[in-house]
Image 1 (cartoon, rainbow, N blue to C red):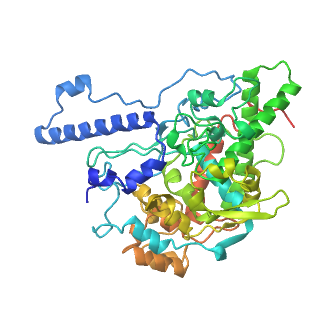
Image 2: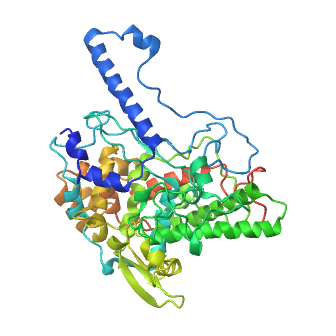
Image 3: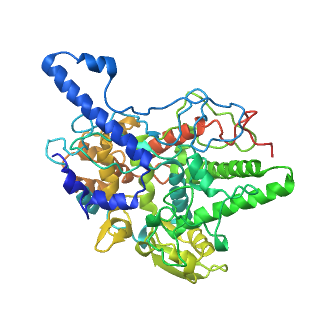
Length: 539
């Protein structure tokens, strides 16, 4: 069934609602539109060739359509000790790898219904796949207090979101022609480089700097500065409240994320002040870049030393994700492309949505509970931090490190499935969005990915019980799908039993492991590297 453009984009539709809370850079829209136009013309040419048996000579001589900006090559300074703002020249051979505004890569070819661009909508039997909302309500019931993990706090989830906003940002590209193709971009740098703090372009980075003593801009009370150019960045804009400006456009999404952004800006400025005390001859640029380099190393150390061991368990070493206890580790390989894979951004790293609770708690300095805020009241709400008593940055951070996190499983908080970004009588469903985005991006179904990751072929639902799933989760999948080969990747993989010592099943552990291995081994500025130009001094 082809998607009707007007119905898909009309006021109140899922596309329109999702577009309203997903920031898309103008450059992303332009590149996507140019690519769609080229593919439309390509298809018309193919039809012409099939009819006449030849390619028009004018096409061979002059080409067609707008120029599409593919990965360009840069002239690089191999001796530069600092990353570029947009990630180019990290790899000195393939200079565009990992930079912002390039297409995501794929492990497997896309599965589109028309073999070009149409979302996967047809089941194995030829009938339409179940609606994503039906899959959500059937396979992903609400989580509850009974599903809290006894060993880990909400900070595990919050770091995952903060990290995600460092490495992936997929734009919304509206359908402007029935069946027209979509080129999926990553709008930010792929590297674990704290770009959510500093931005993913030079202009963005400049807008965040004071250009005095290497510091980042702040506002009163050492809050993040106001975003004066994007008035719709949050929903609390009545003075004295305002929307926060940070290195990533999603910084306002919830007070936990706002707090993380704030403490990293404060830490940058603390480092810059300390570096100036120790090196009074350094100017603004040196102070800024050295503090930025240290904060980027924080992000890598926390991710690979604290976050991933909990998530991936015994799959750390097979993917070379563990850090060395002391000294340097020369893991960099210039043939490894660190760019984000579509399946990682679209499905695998969305496993964190299962970890989100229904409330955000605030605690006093003595760790007395000051109350909880329902997540649906906290979305895009900066008023809580700026103006509410007992709702401070420190209070939310203490809540993150005190409250238990939800376990990773098929269950998802009702605040996300029924009340995501409420707008009047409308709201979104994060599980349905995840599933639909997988179909839009042409992700192959779950059974293809489990085979890709080396697990036994599943020919029917019972094969899942014998290898990766419990009886209860298979029953939910069987209720939603007619055939095991129709299962969407997000729903199938998030429902798996966990790998040993980890919080995800083998399929997501495999896909996460491969991407994070590429982010480590494909990063010339990896913090453990012993390269003369980029390394840290021995401790």
